[in-house]
Figure 1 (cartoon, one colour):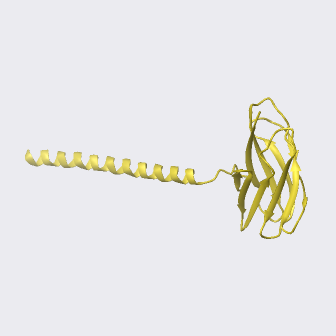
Figure 2: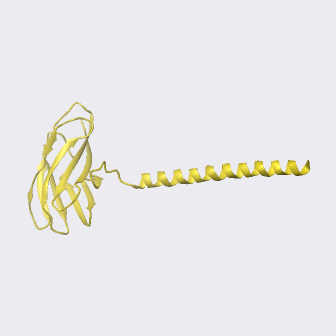
Figure 3: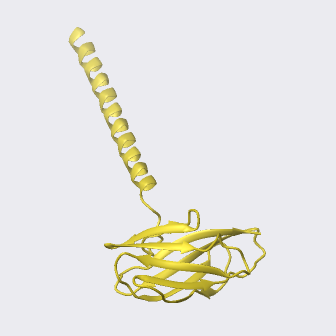
Length: 156
């Protein structure tokens, strides 16, 4: 009888240890997944992206770094000058801006080569009924597999 009671206690302890081990495994696995998700930039399948900070954004595509600068924070219905530069030579295929939270069509970014390793241009954003509008600028660079995706907002 003592032996049977001891066997049941060992089985119960074994089941508890097994449940604890499985729980710890899933908690660690979940924590690792969340850590990876939090540290990975969102790309929406469009390559690297960044958000303007003080009207500037640095982005790395493959092995080349690009600096995108605006003349000032974007304002709807006003001309905004833009500069795209890199330490290495590059050629732009084009750039457009699209509304994220409201369809605004594809707004062109007019760009032309300026100095060595630098392109300059301008764009204008249309006004809309949204108080806070989210935008994405898609820049296609010749020789790069994916475009750069740059996010910004305007408020009216």
